Length: 366
Image (cartoon, rainbow, N blue to C red):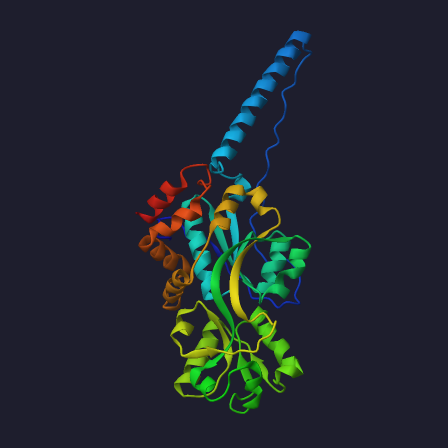
């Protein structure tokens, strides 16, 4: 059960798939049947009836145009979405920050009357699924490191980037500060101390953009990493290894990013000399499948409005790493900070066209 007394959004557990695998990866609900309106059969009409009918059509059309113009001029909210938009399918690629932001989206979509479905996927499968329209939303497009992951989909128009949802982030290879103080300041310095690093750099799950960048660096003679291997693991597995190594004052290089409550508490240093690899300062963007904003304008407006900050994500990530599920962490944060929701609801209604702010207030009990 969710905190609001409703069933928690379903979580479709799928295996992480390698980049080279093909096929359909998502379990989706059957599309809703569209109702086909049939015109009543009519007999012949007189000239006068035809004129009156034309006049009524003109007046009705004028009224609709006036209504639409009024709505556009006042910036009023969308009047809900079609039934086919009720289920919103979001990707969870297993990173704590994206679990947190996806949790926020899920909790609020539920309060607005939608049925969010969070699906666990790898990055490559996420983009293939957006292209195939088996997925609607991904809140975890880290740039510029994911440029190669998304460029083909952007080029063919099958995936759209609709907003930047986080700025001030960072991404790259890190070492303990005591290692940096001993002379490892840049990427090429790692190779100078290959034995101390046991010829290893630690990453996260297979198919991740950061892992791919590290593998490219190992292959590049200019980066001085010949003979190194990338140890792929989960985020939690990598952090456990890093914490143990640092406890023992051993040398380790691993994939780091900000925001992150555990890494934020670690005494680590980001290495320089990353060139145009994609590592360094980062922003996070929101992706949707082609045409989603037009097909589901209300849900699309809400998703597009979502903007986060480092402090916000850090607080929710800490709760998740301490054992809370993403929806509970998000709900607790929103109850403590209800004012953050306002800007996300600009131009948004509930699924059936009701008052979004009132629905959120009721759901959060504030």
